[in-house]
Structure formats: C-alpha cells, structure tokens
Image (tube, rainbow, N blue to C red; front, side):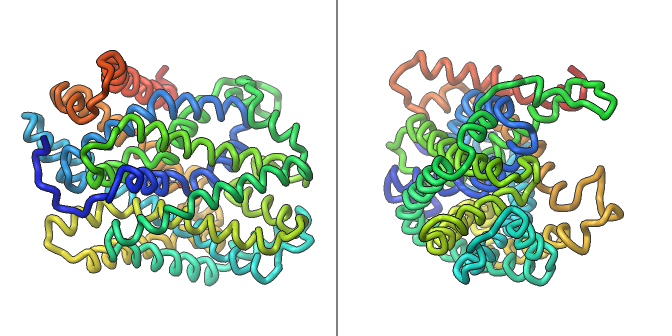
Length: 466
Ligand code: PHE
C-alpha cells in the first residue's frame, strides 16, 4: 500500500484531518480577502467565476494534493521526488515542493501583517473603540493603525511568535485541539453578523452586488472617454483566489494529507472542506456588503474593507463590544490555523532531511518570514510612496498578487499534470479508492485535461495571447 513508513505524526481520525484542513482553508482569505477583491472587481460575475474555479479546478486539485501526500507520507519536497522516482518520472518534480516552500514563505510574510491587524482590533474592540463609529471614523481608526510602522510590526511579531509556538510543538498536539471548537464558533458569529446585516444594512443591495451576474460590469474596463475594452484580469484573480482560499498549490494540503489515516475517503473529505470554505466566504460577503452600502463606504476600498465596515456594525449593535472583540479573536484563530499550514511543508522537510528539531526549524522559518514581513508592514506607511511601487503596487500588493495569482496556480498546474500524466493511473485509483469507476474516470479526465487546460487558458488570457 504505502511506499514509505510514516515518519511524521498522524491525525487521530478522519475528523481531525478534516478539521485541520478546514482550519488551513478558512482564514483571512475568506473573511478579509474575498470581500475586498469581490468589491474591487465589481461583484456577482467575479463571484461566479471564483465558484466555477473552486468546483472545476480547486476540488479536483485538492483531491490530487491529498492523495499524493498520503501516498508519499513525507514533506511535499520529498513526496514529489520519491513518488516521481518510484513511478519512473523525473526527479525534477521535486521542484514543485520547493516552489511551494517559497510560496508559503512569501504568503506568510504578508498574511502575518494582516493577522496583526486583527490582533490589534481585538484590543481596540476590547477597549470600546468601536462604539458609535461612523464610516469616516472607522476609516480613521484603520488609517491610524496602518500609518504606524511600530504598531504594525509589533502585532506582526506577536502573530508570528504565536504561529511558531504551535509549529514548534508539532502539528498534532498543537492543532487538533485548536480547530475543534474554533470553527463552529466562528461560523456562529458570522451568522449573527448576517442577521445584523439583514436588520441594519442595505441587505438587498448587498445581495444584488454579490449575486447579480453582470459580466459587462466586471470584464469591461472603461477609460474616461467612455471607451471600453475586455479585461481578463478579474478571471486571473478569481482563479488565483480559488487556490488561495483552499490552500492549494503550495503543499499545505499535501502535507496535511500525508498525516491522514489510510482508510479515510479523500473525495468525501475534499468536498466537505471546499463546501465549508465557500460557505464561510459567502457568509462573510453577505454580512459585509449590506453594511458597506448602508454606511456609504466604497466596495472597492481595498484591503481595509473588512476592518472598516465591520467595526461600524459592532459599534452600533447591542452587545457590540463583546461581539466585536470576540469576532476579531476568532479571526485571529482562523488566521492562526492557516498560517501554521503555510510553514508546515518547510518545517516537515527540514525535520526529515537535516535532522533538525521542529523547534529549530520553526525558529529558522519563522525568523526569515518575520524579516520579510517587515517590508509588508512598511508598505502601508514608510514605503507606500510611488517611488517604492512597481507597476503601481506596493511590496505588500506585489506579494499578494504574485503568490495568489501566479505561483499557486502554477503549483496547482504542476500537481495536476503530475497526478494526471507522470504517474500511472493505478496510483490515484488505489489511493482515492472511489466506489464508482465512473466517478473516478471523471475525476481523472478533469485532472488530466480540464484543470490544466483551464489554468493555462486563464494565464494566456491574462497576458493577452488568447
Ligand atoms: N487558505 C488560507 C486562507 O484562506 C490561506 C492559505 C493559502 C493557507 C495557502 C495555506 C496555504 O486564509
């Protein structure tokens, strides 16, 4: 069955695996990034493309990542290398694992800064700073935070230390307990927020914005003279976000799969993980946009959107001080369980190859990501000027854009090609162990043709070739 003896801890059950994978998937991507890019790219049509990407590319690729991880039972770098050599493919496939390690690094180095905002807002909320905020003052609260390099770096450091503390102690002891109670609670609080948006927000307008599909609004960009042309960028960003939000394309889900018990169903788990992740994102959107419109905020305001719109709601609702604080506590937890998975591929590799302790590995990786993260924090203040921008983007924006829209889809493409073409059909067939041969055939077709072609098409489209 399994080529390698298990060298790492395993999850105690399928449920534990699922919770950890959901913990990885659900994070800032759902609650911070999804609303803000949906706002920037104009709403419903963008959401639809994102959902199609989740279904057509995300779910099949997630199944591939999990099955490779479980078969390899090693860090993604060694899993790719060893499976390739066992199947007579080139050892160069190990590069996919390497790419993932680098991508994880880069993501963590801005993720941690945004998680730091959430930490800062725990304190703000706790001290009652949200009470009676209007749109303008909520904007000022956020502006003051991001204008201060010291505060941003401080909270970024706290979050990085939290992440590394869990990573150093090993996935099993650290994570299983954390995610079991956290996700349901976050979900509950989002439901409360949706209820509040329904009562106090411009609910109808929010829903129309999120779900009315008007392709011309999203995919046509018009200049001041009213000349419009088709723009492919929203498709690239929607696909990139499907990878980002599902933690795909860099080995996070692969390394979690390597700790998965052998008798658990991969297809079933994957669908549940994707559904949970999508539901959280949509709920966040449904909670936020009605508030955005009711308070005269700009949907395309950018990365601060959630941090400006939600505090207004907390400041006005009964019990808002408690709810607001609790919400940001939970957001921190959700980000925490995601950031752990961002470094796990690197830490797993360091501990199996270099005979390094988890503690040392965590310190090394965390230290480097922390250093890189300083640049992300400064992107909002000292380095926010035009002289520090490339293509009009700050360092923070560049890292966000490059990892989600280019590096993760490239990783996903490689994983799809590897699973579909480089290994024999028997490997995925045995590992997925699907009851219906028809269903397996369909998945295999998608992973060989549809997913790779989709990713390549979106890339070519974005650079204007097709
Ligand atoms: N999926 C996480 C989120 O939505 C981010 C993430 C990306 C985590 C890639 C691991 C790997 O917040």
